[in-house]
Image (cartoon, rainbow, N blue to C red; front, top):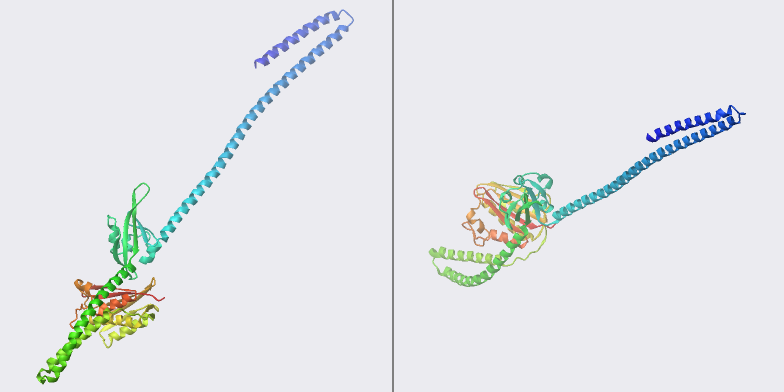
Length: 445
């Protein structure tokens, strides 16, 4: 603004000066021949042209300054825009890297979770996790197989809604359980032994978020222990019975000889006494023979046996003409076992005869067969008078009997035959309501 005012003042002053100069020159020109007029006009034209050119030059300079200023501003804005675009590009590049890192981390987390799940599903022990409300969160494949349950049907339910005693009580106890053994009956009626360990489940902050229930199937181990114990008892009994039978039979032979001589010379009134002596000698000989047969190791002639036919035949034979006992068979499909037909028939016959004798007034004899996990499970249940708890642990011992004329080898022989086949036999009884024998045999399928 100051430069423009100064230029105007100078322009006015210049024109005044030129006017004065022209006046000075025109005055003499009026007195001469007129050549001064031409000279003054030329000078005035030149001065005017110079002034116009100077003005134009000044205006162009101003325009160039304005253009330069505008271009400077434009260049500054372009630099800012370019810088912003560069920053955005770099941010997008970093965002892409972060997305890749995020995807890699998520993939790694999923991989680790899947790996842990594979480990949990691959362990041979059953593993069940529950939350603080004792609701089931997860069940691995081993637990499904051992307990015969489905994770989809059990997940989210209360533990005691899915499992019965003693597992429900074990899970509710505050004190952790370590390597405790418990019997358990699955929903399918399978009798198993479980080795159980429980522990608290905690998060990374150390807070309790639930419980872990870990268990193993000890059924086979228990059966093996029973077989080993029985073999040890039989071995000891065999050594003892061999010596006893030798001594007793020597003495019995002498007594039997004298009884025969006495029978020839005794009077008719005393013959009944001699006959009684001979009868008791024969009974003692039978007992000794059975003892020796029981103690003698069984020699199996194993073959593939159709359990369905064997059970029907032995049950019908044991029932005979007894119309007061109803026999019901539940054998789904053909079930085969590897065993000695003669010995298995003997064992099953003893069980069925005992069941019939336990129901003198009639009742129901129920036979069920379940085939799973490479084993055949036979359940024989009667509705008789049951076995008192105080003698239940003695029923498989030789010479133990509650019958007036029994010898006490029936159930002992059953146990021996079943164990010699690699199986097991267990008993459950409710006094006054009936008894159940559970036999497990290796399947031939």
